[in-house]
Length: 442
Image (cartoon, rainbow, N blue to C red; front, side, top):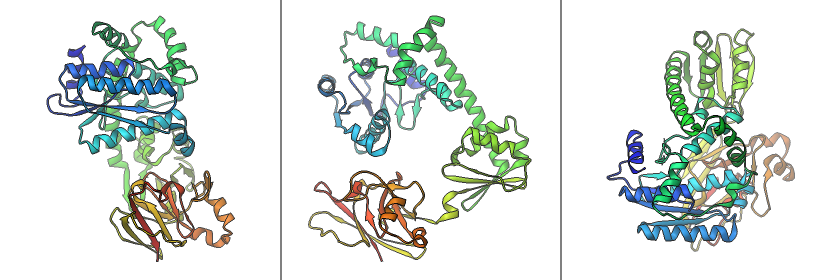
């Protein structure tokens, strides 16, 4: 096992065993316990991070205590975080699983940066990769979904991805390691567990080496994806032209490519166009000019022998950015002044033209833009979400003035302030606030 992991780390250039400092995500389950022990035996410098999602009561408390003792056993730094997962899921309108994933990886990255660590290691193995591939295939996917889990994705590394589940269990038995069982892994309420317990056993009856087979398939698909990527790059160089915020794609060049729909889908992926819409675009190559297609973020128009793509925002409003440390912003007659100060002793302004925001909750750069249909925020002083369209009706804003309403948006697309009206409750000043960003409409 140790030699296999050492070789996998080297072949995939996950990190430098001799010099790098690794943050290891440890839940207390079998997989992460093996990962921590393997890194310890390989004499790799590491720290342990454990997430308590507040979902399983005393069982989760016992998991945290177990992992804390594990860190003490290996004499490594230990980090733990207790999340309000259900509250976050409800606030963001996402599933509990997605909320847990978002909270987990955001926190891991914050630790990596603040502690100056080199990478984040998770305990994903061959069976996890196989499940991911089949889930992606079930939901519909391209090449990216068929290579399953990557061994390295940014600062995230998976040293056990070349190891099978049975090998992990044998390692536990041989080294007399203890671990914690998560009862939720047996619940068929989750899609992955239904696949794990109901579908994969049938497939393993057909192919006992299914995990290894899918691992090899993932490697081959990854190679094919690289070939496609290079082909798309060559096509992009020939077919694409950018001017300001508008992109032009030459139709005759696209028509000469192999698998035109696939290539165009890859070209249009950054603009948010689905594969089904791309098929319609290709079918319209020979149609009259003026055919329009939309993604959530962009508008594409077929014009003579080219496709013209521009952000939806470009046709409705301008967008302007306020960088961290920037004190003034002028945007289409709207002048804003920003000031960063300590919260202690600060008197909060009582004016609709001023927003006092918790600076440490804001992700920069901030963007000033006109509001869009579908925009929502959490008005300070009110409970829950509210669509801006409904809020403006409540505020009795005249119809001909609604288009002039602008919003201040964080880098993670949260509306912090409807300028001139009301800030968002998520960025309000509290007793825990340390720094305040005061944004004033001049």
